Image (cartoon, rainbow, N blue to C red; front, side, top):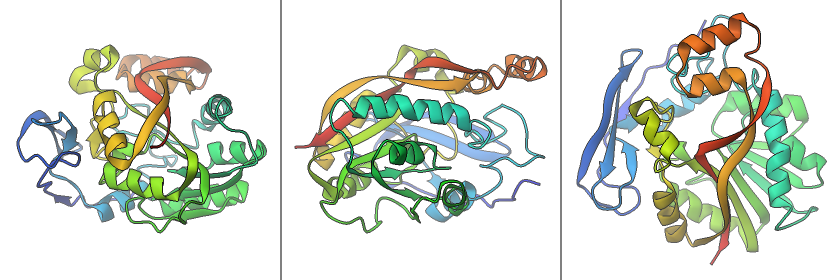
Length: 303
């Protein structure tokens, strides 16, 4: 059975980037009878959830079987999952995507290096980085996912929130964050913590939503990042603002290239009929290369 989570919300008094207090509503709806509201800052255009789940609420969610599906929690609709996939079910695509990401990092640095991943999930990328020669460590909010990563790969995974986690100063050559920045309660503060933990010339490697993309605009309010776990929905413009305020400059940026299952693709597109068909025809688990036009991959360094 899926864990029962009490969703507790708190108001956001000001924009997380510029501190502006005026905003307009972008989306307001309910998912599983839980209210959801996103607003746009009138000063810098950051889109963020307000009110938003408390940190403890998100910690419980990320450690629940709502997030990591059990046998009774099936289906590809992201509404059913409150916005996120089953990491174990789609592990093959994550491992293939890890190889692509490591190839891009190799353009800028080579192992052996110290590498930290924020948002380790079940450990697929970190295990691939270790196999490539990196000395690795991970950080994740979810006790459940951290335990899975430790048991599967013998990885060193800490648990906590990046905004206030005590990272060692000037220790890492590479810090990665794939898919998790939207869940940070304060992206500028989190990125500033990352900047302190990087060695001079170290790399920040991330991906993030691009709300400005034509793909996302076409999905409009059906965009899958509009869910309770996404505290912000970034664009390339607002991500650059966050990076700049945290002391970073971008070296490389492109649309994310990755592998994904057919089931994941149709669920992200909110094609529920196609999702049911792909599952019935048994090609939902086929892994295919894709260009994620709504997601940006970038490599940055400190100024």
